[in-house]
Length: 524
Image (tube, rainbow, N blue to C red; front, side, top):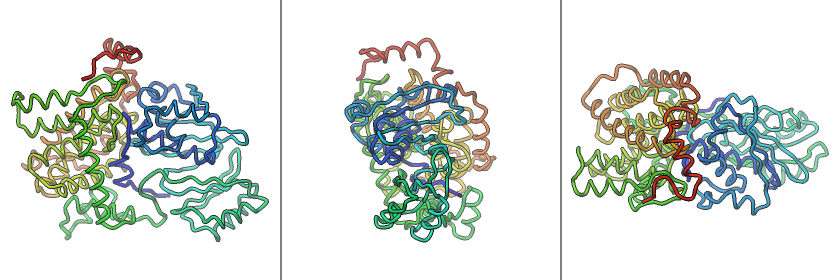
């Protein structure tokens, strides 16, 4: 089953609250599927994390628990109740145990979940693949592959082959398959749920035990006859021969084909995302507070210095630093942000794009176009590498955000397609090998500084590309190198809180202080 990244699924999104998309948004999506698997009736939950993975040391502090609890309750990723999801889950009478045990996980972000009520028990294994994206890999002992981009109907049955033959004729489907594990079931992937009458007829059969309906958790659905005009940057350039489309126009062509929606709808969907980003920056610049936090609203301090002309460098570059900081501060205060491409790197791309756009006095339409151009660069990264710091280090998050931003800035400046691609290549080359080692096990520092670095690197690389500097290595090859470097980074340096700055004496002191009523740094 072939799938292709979507700008709105994989790259720019989800709209969410929390410090980390790999933890908060992904875990919430996994738990939403768990809730559907149980028909909404859950009494007890066992969550198991592998000691050799990332989640064993980060699940509480980086928001996996919060996301899971909200998902078990059926909430969305931007629900304002998420910070109190543990309390709400307890009030709902659902008990939760979390165990760190060897589950033989091959992926660092593996969730093994056992759910029970008075009449049934189900087991589900899933992974967070980066930027809020997920894959369910096992249900009730049977291997599956669910990304949350279909309506999934599971028919638990004593005669799966017979039921499969019936549903092939009765239910419009993209895929239908028999799974035999601890329990037998037929899985049906479709773009809409089967009608009530059909399901009632199936339930009336003596060989059908029960039915579970799992709603999609991604905004853009997949389909069997899925077509995209290109998969790589090289193929995009070949596709564009004789057309002379801009990066933004090529992005719209891709996402329109990928999502089965018009180019106008693609543009308007991105506009809604741009407005959420804009609102987050404005909110951050008003000042933010949150108790479980290391840093205060430092963007206010920078704004004061910028207004008094006390800073070195141009106003545009300093505005970018301020916008990046504001966005990251909203994330750290549980405000609504857009993972772009992740929550941990949510500041670099919008901070750079809005900072440059405001300095050039560009319209919202130009920002939307730039963000679409950034999105297609992200598609190439998603298809060949990863956005997960747990897999590729911070290079995969802020590095990717910087590469996307560099291409977007060239687009806003009226540069050529070749210059946009060159800027992205240069920016990614500059971030190879960047590790992920958050201080105090929070996605704040050095995350903020690395977002700022990615955004300012994007501006520098955009200007170099606009000046026709040679980027030498084609973008596809840089992405491949990024994947190879990420695979070689030691697991202690990939968001596990086990290496780098995370294990310095002061970082440990900060982490310990967060367990106490008084934080290490007093919030502004």
